[in-house]
Image 1 (cartoon, helix red, strand yellow):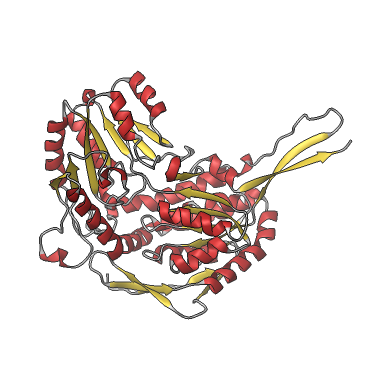
Image 2 (tube, rainbow, N blue to C red; image 1 turned 30 degrees about the horizontal axis):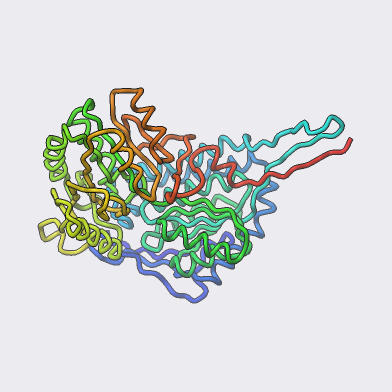
Length: 482
């Protein structure tokens, strides 16, 4: 790509530079070339954005909810019109393959339209506490919401996750990931044209500066974050130091894909490859990175898995024929390589991958072949630590009790996939698996209206359904004395 993007932040309806004038370089992970520059915002920029959001919030809350919905639908329409442009930017910025990234814009549009459509469900209740008086509740917005976006699906998470807060009458300040901020800046340009000034504000910068300032700002009483457990814990600590805040955390996962012998070898392998999200280099919190295979078909599954994974085409993420692109950043690339080394050190068998693909094209960039370990056991780091990369661990099991014990033997509980023709078994085990989102004879798909979120250290709160809309409001109780 020849063009060099120079983007600005959105604060109070205006596209601006940072107070200091400092910028962030944005690097293409496929070739380590400079893609563009964005402002390196810090505490002063966050404060400007929060003040703009706070100033705009009363009028936004006073806007009829049907009008708010119409404005969000207009935003979704522009995103849809610019899908090709946004998809190309996302691919260059993240390294994710173009065939899959096309769906990100569509998913963002669908989420915005979904929340625009259910805004009238923000109803209160009447409570028959006494016969003499009228007791009721109404739902009110928090005010200013802070949203911190991860690097793997930057546009989708920025656009889709602002829909519920805005429909509920909040205004928002979004902090994109510093590794892939360009699409969020384009989103800011669109918001500047479509929405009233100050309703959406976007501040680019590092997590330890701009992100920390947003979390700590006393006027931001509601925060949503998608990312790692370590950062989620840091956000909870930082937020608690300045005010009492409501926080939604959608964190990591070490998600199981459980296949029973009655599904057959081909189904098991299809499930394993699909669930690993290799098109995103495994950089997805919902990736089923632990494959549990019954001992009776372990040898057959691992043999076919090796053949199928080695047939995946690693290459230019803009090429329609590529099955996997590069890791998102240099720092994350080193993290994935460290995990591969840990697997070997702990005694797992490297079945395939774990190194840089051959060929001159791969001399630069953050490339690693799709990786599979077998003979993985619960004591190993690759069994219980999230890698967030294209590394699949295959685990052998023999009976259900042993299986459930291993499945639940991590700090995480985000997703799980269960494959069997026995419906009674599927329902029985689903109740015992510690996870917030379970697929039975399926994997990876998200569905409008179905709440997504984890248990244990995979997070708190639910998104993508009506629960998300309600979570951006607070109940106020009224009693009318008659």
